[in-house]
Image (cartoon, rainbow, N blue to C red; front, side, top):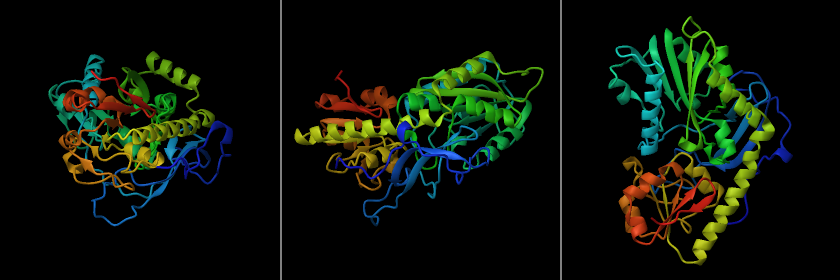
Length: 392
């Protein structure tokens, strides 16, 4: 690991002028500014075999804000998705159950009606919970309920994706969209939310306006602590039942606008968060090396690869990284070739510290792997600053 960096970072003081060459993935119109630059990065869903040829391919990874729509988006993505489906964490399942119940309470879930789900490779499906409420899953519309759980962000053409969902919606139906709000990403400095394959990052005011432009009105809004701030937004076609935007949606729009979520200057503070967290992680691992500690990691999630690469973490720093997904066992992380092992394999290593790359997993992994702390080890949450957790 080295203290040097090979990537620039956009900050409010260094914000580039809008470049007319960038075309907004929503409006199709030119104009935007780079607000976060992670330099050259391997694909987040690349998990090479230990004997795969090196070096692993790397590609530019930059976030742009449209000067037309305010949508934060991935500048370019030459990668081909190959991601092994992850295991749904308990926190995501619990949040899904809460969201389904709230949608039910709001009258959006009606037994015997059709539901169309747009899946995400990161999990979070509602199919089981909705089937228990006697809803019928269909492959196309019209559907009285359409569910999109972190799904549409994976579409390169955002207007086409939302228009397709609106076209499949029955006249009296509801589209429920769950997303990691830009407000929380910036508020918490979660710069490593940026990854290949994630083409759009939604703030509530921008997503509400996107819905309006395809003939939908926002009729409900719920917030959850998942990932530091997740929102479920309900859309419907204007009707006697859904005649206007609801006050809770308006309140969330006004709150996020007051934070500055649609401005390039506010979004560019992610560059400062990047610099600060990378410096802190490098200093922390320098300390573990000096102390002769064995350091492992947990969760080969989509956000993990960029953090490892940006902080120059190698096998000299982290001996192995565990993941609950069996499909990833025996593979490696790209670039540094840190091996991916089973949770049991991590326990066998008797690590003194375990870097947890997804903070929401803390309660779950502590309960599932008590041997880590029983052997004298400690969990270190990267959120994305390193934070040691006191033993139970």
